[in-house]
Length: 362
Ligand SMILES: [Zn+2]
Image 1 (cartoon, rainbow, N blue to C red):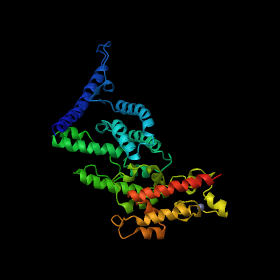
Image 2: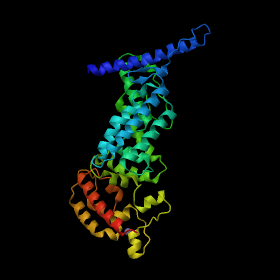
Image 3: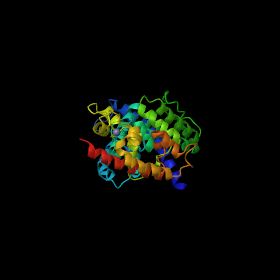
């Protein structure tokens, strides 16, 4: 408790110092305009001052954070790409090491949308790289799965907490300098009284963001996530080995021709196995792959008999696994991968099928 208070006071005084230093340096700079000053004396400005790891100039500090994190990412990427690390661990590393370093101290600056974009672009590029997913995957999906908010939401949340603490410490003058740049379309009230109220608003905002997306992939994903009813948590299956294959399915940006066809128009969207054995043009989408393609029938029988044995009555409201199998409901099935047994059996089925698919393709 004491250490926490101390940090608060340090942060508080940091902002106060930042504020005063700006004033002092403005005076120095103004003095610089004065022809009577001593021209041989070099004056320092906030760009050259580092205090508690924070440069007292926004641009310098932003660039400093980005440069540092870029260097560290190069070192980390080799480790992160190793198969022995689960996605859950990779995300944990990313948040603990890179994310926090990248965003360090930024809550005290007045950042513009351009500043936030610069940070987000960097984060988005890197995440697809270490999760080994297609860089064209809808970022709303994989970031919701991993529970990584935009830089603005994350930094503003930190600022919100800082302000709450500063108010308790009676640093009201400093609070006045920590403005939020409201975004009308977001409808987030950053003047909320409690963190809990803010979290509720953020949850609504995240759902709205998915709803307003023009992407059909995101809309399908929204159905998955609404069945699960847990948009505010990182998906637990990401902590298990092999989760990238499942993430790719939930992203609708994967190897199946229906989805890769959108990215690469030279490709056919039809199932090659059905073409080869029956000369039929059938779109290879998730439904076809999971429930209908005759090439996987043997694997499918084993998989379905496994599914039927899994007891999930506790997570299925008014639905049961037989129903899902009869309806061939791929979306509902994808919403159940948080169950370890469903996850494992789907993964096994997937890998067997991919083997067949790879062998029989030209
Ligand atoms: Zn087929």
